[in-house]
Length: 200
Image (cartoon, rainbow, N blue to C red; front, side, top):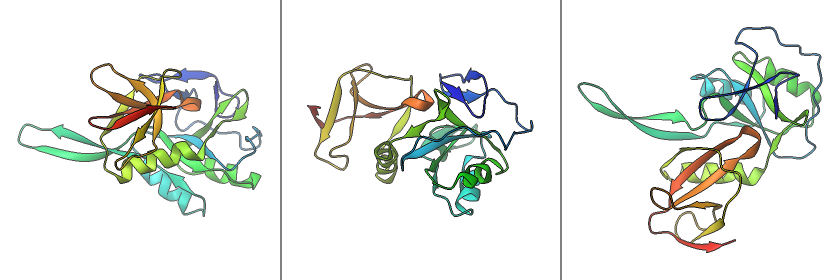
């Protein structure tokens, strides 16, 4: 997997794809990396802790962008508080677009670094995977990052608010459903609790 425009691989602390370019370094806006030709999504690597701001800026350029959010309970000496944090720190999902000039427009957003690529093509993420993340978030379902999982027993949830959701079944530390975003080498897991499952 390659990241950005002619950049070397680097990996974050839990195995996610990252750009090797340092924040603030110049970006060659004239170097063209081909896009996968579909109407899915792309993963844009961004400055950490600025994901939602960058997402809003991209949306302000009339492009569709999305940052999955999860809730994290933080404890301080005098109180506990639940806060919203990006599920994938350092990434914003951007909807596929046909205008080549839009790529440069997105990359010119302050805090945007590079698109995640695979085999020298900016890697696409299936629309269904983004819909699954949006559905999990809309249902306030507890989810958390999980070590990247590429293969395993695929199952589907039967019934309940997540009926039809598919992923990889994991029985370690309870029953979990793992959804993997392969171009980013990242996975998230939700607790299955009392959900019924069927093999896909």
